[in-house]
Amino acid sequence: VDGRQKKLLKRMVASPMPRWQYLAGYLLSRLVMLVIEVVVFLGFARLVFGVPFRGPLWELGVLCVMTSLAFSALGLLVASRATTIETVSGLMNLVMLPMWILSGGFFSASRFPAILQPFVRALPLTAAIDAMRGNMLQGVQLGQLTLQMGILLAWFAVPFAVSLRIFRWR
Image: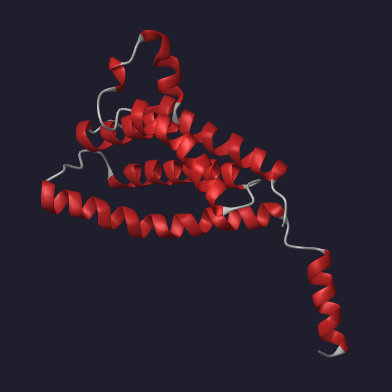
């Protein structure tokens, strides 16, 4: 290693990439994968099961992007301080399992007691399911889904901001 390479290595170690760039890069990489995943999944649903698309496809795309950002930010938050993959896996199960049960993906979220309804409605998965069902099955316009979009936006902004604060290079 010559002198120039040593200086470059020393500078790279002394000043790692800014956290916001690293975390934003992660989110953008998830968005690239989102396009592939959504096209394949929705294409399969349409061809095999005849799932209708009653709302505009570009609005469904916006909902998919917002949902992806919200869950990516939540994943970043969970993983930003964990030191092992096992810890991340356990924490993600702790976060995701209640959402899977309460969100309305398997059975109606409205069947839970009234005291739990505000919590159930504030979950990002509930907002995503309600918005996508509305768009795809009922043709609900994006302007009518402001509550769900607001919930997804909050679940993106808050976990991402907290991740920026607590993320540490290892």
